[in-house]
Amino acid sequence: MTDRETGRGRDTERPEGQEGMRGDGALARGRTETAEERADRQWQDLMQEIRVVQTGVQILLGFLLTVVFTPRYESLGSADKGIYILTVVLGSLATGALIGPVSFHRLVAGRRIKPETVAWASRLTFIGILLLLATLTTALVLILRVATDNAIVPWLVAGVLAWYLLCWFALPLWARSRHTAKMRE
Image (cartoon, rainbow, N blue to C red):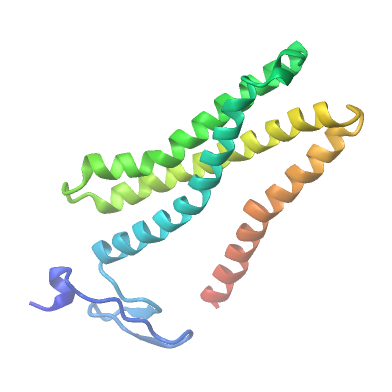
């Protein structure tokens, strides 16, 4: 039995554009790895991504949780208090979604479902990013309503939101479609 058949193979990288034959006779490009190896690699990649975003969302939530205990909070109007509560709830939901993959992995570790774990963790991470987007947007609305003239708040928030959407979604989707099309050629 070969390493490939037992699932104990190693990742082998080919230089970009170099092709070879897989064990089943099919044309292979790039990385050659088993489903288990791919799941392990994807899990490590996902954990690195979560480490970056999780720290930021936890710090943001920590600061948000302290606002209610400041003297300034009492002077906020009901609309601003509502925005604050919404922001805290969104931040809490984002934190939960971004910590979820770790808990998920702990509860299913050793059950031989790593590919499924990666898929669920990836979904939770994406939901966490969407919730973080909403948290940052509502926090910005609240801060700008308190700090500046209300007339420019929607414009400033729309500009920042457009920037987030460009950086977090539009650019990666454009790159994905562009490079996916090149791979097909």
